Length: 635
Image (tube, rainbow, N blue to C red; front, side, top):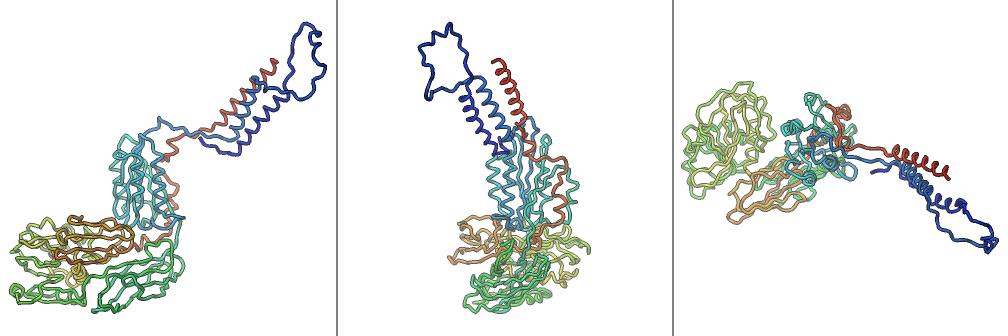
């Protein structure tokens, strides 16, 4: 029950007025006596106040009821009635969990408002309705379903969601929701988003035949972001840091950027960014410390609409010059690509030299060992790259068979995002021919493929009694095609060199991306400290990935080796993104803001009927007025 006019309660003041009028204007009573002399003993005149009780009559009660009914009608009561006969529905709630949803909105964020709206839809659902909650961002995933969870569990699942990460998996989320529909239920889809989907229009949903309600959140905001951060070590104590700043605004922006090394300010720059553009900044720093730095961070001073993309973090690989061994009878073009990385300690071996290298005191630990056309009986420590693996391999699971031709127009794709292939464009590479593994190792996953032909594989491989080693297999024939002359080739080698210095952990990731953890048995124990979160400790078993990376900042690792030493490393999770950092409302949002295909009825309107009680109250009051007139006429 709700009341539209709370001031109408003033009408209840009429009740004491009616009582006073009935008390003061009591009607004369007619008494029949046999003779007036019987009243002779009474005084002729009564003086002073007389106490009288309230005359409770039928007319008084009718008048009070009329006053009460007229007052209630003045208050304008509305009665919400649930309709038990309404058809059951299947309500699918799609919640945007990308980084742009972390933008400020009032005292909260866009995402906190999205959670409020999702919980409101859940609360309005009937007990017979089926409610499914799906999140979409980098991927689409079912969060909760009322067929498995109660209403309070659905609400708790929505509260537990976190926003962060780039991606547009809305189509996948719609497809996922459609596969979960029950044919006997009336479907309704609710899309809760800020519209930052990278769309030019909503034509992609024209073929979606189910009712859709859009819940757009957030106002248009100007924003600046740090979208790129890369580092190259140019000497033993000198680093070159590349940063890109973006301005998502129609006005020029002037921001102050601060470079921090291990949490301490090291340099500062005034950055002027033209409207709707980006600008690059190169820092050359020499920390000048005995111990090499571990963490680099660039941050804007001041605040804007999205604090998360105002900084970018990067973990420096431990150690100084990476040590690389190249074992090949023909070192071209691998030697040139490795030397192009810069600041690399490269040692060349022929196959015979490598087999006979057991000189006393010679260091045998390389960060990266490259074998071309040769495979040793035992695998060395560190990251291993096999190029053009031989057919007579000592490891049958890595033996190559025949090669196959790859069409010049073959589509190169990356099945899984990985630091080894990160930032490399393979689209214009012509592969010529690639080798095929006769019996691929089950632990190898494809990182790069042309059509259906795997080109780059990665996984953990164990040989004889040694510990599992991280292995990369390049199946491209370097003598064919244009890969060896393409810029993608030295970039791939550079990524491998960087990755080899700590083959389990990348320097940076995008927020929301899974963070690969070191392989099992590589360390005795592992400790992870996420930004602003409690420490996570694993003593023997840990997962392959850590996917709670929605918060930007440093994810710091401590890894206990079997000899008791502790290695420390930091990975920077960065939120700056050319799509997610643009907080301006897209034009297409206006065109679909009020549309609802398929005759969609919001849950609260379909579930409840709003009944205005004023006509009923006035009708009853009118009947009582007729009754009052009848009683007065009889008197």
